Image 1 (spheres, rainbow, N blue to C red):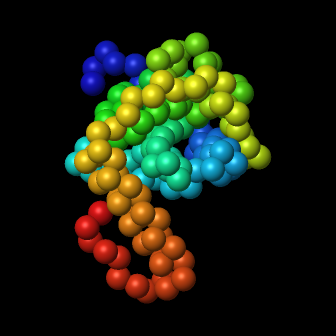
Image 2: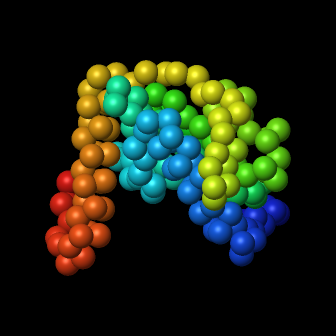
Length: 159
């Protein structure tokens, strides 16, 4: 678009995002959550960076941001709140945290682990949405496990 500033990502940003993702997954495992990366959110047609589920049925979504340009280029994250009880941003220690919305949770992470710096407000899902999300998370995780153990298996088309 003429007159619009170009937003470019550094070639290293996917590596930064992968390290943050690994740390967040470790953090949530330590907190008693099972987490799935790159989880499809239907009917929104979006993909959450991480969705985590605990034994109480609480659903958390984490949006990973690797740099300022990544945050500025991606403004679809408010839609994710309709699919979780709590929403967090996860960044590394170099990220300019002051640009992140204060009404969202904040996690600092690297490849070795993470820490919650700001808790996310709780906005409980209604029962029907929760049930649907839990089933989708279970099916997604099960299909991914099946692909690892049986690489040629046909995926279920309901996701």
